Amino acid sequence: VAGLETSLPLMLTAVKEERLTLERLIKMMATNPRQIFKLPLQPDTHIEVDIEDEYTITNEMMHSKCGWTPFAGRQVVGRVQRVVLRGQEVYNQGQVTAEPGSGKVFIV
Image (tube, rainbow, N blue to C red; front, side, top):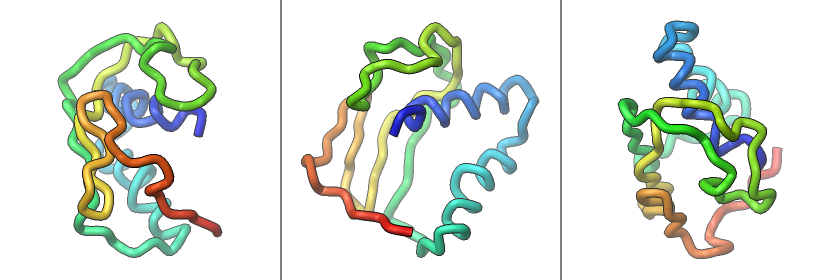
């Protein structure tokens, strides 16, 4: 999904710039989508983020098939370090570790 990889760093940058609270970000990116789509809580699912890491977004760091982002060149804060989904690590230090096709189909 285009924009998904950059959404959290962009939002964390807004938090750092005091344009958004961390509590509001959590509601916007986790709590509300879970409620809207009636998703169950997944206690064995989490992300680890270095909220101090400042960097510039580049097209080369994108993992999506499109291979580019309209946010290239933008300075942001907050780099995802690790993602655990349903108890399985799927991302670690910039590398997707999930097997292709290991996701679940989600139909609303």
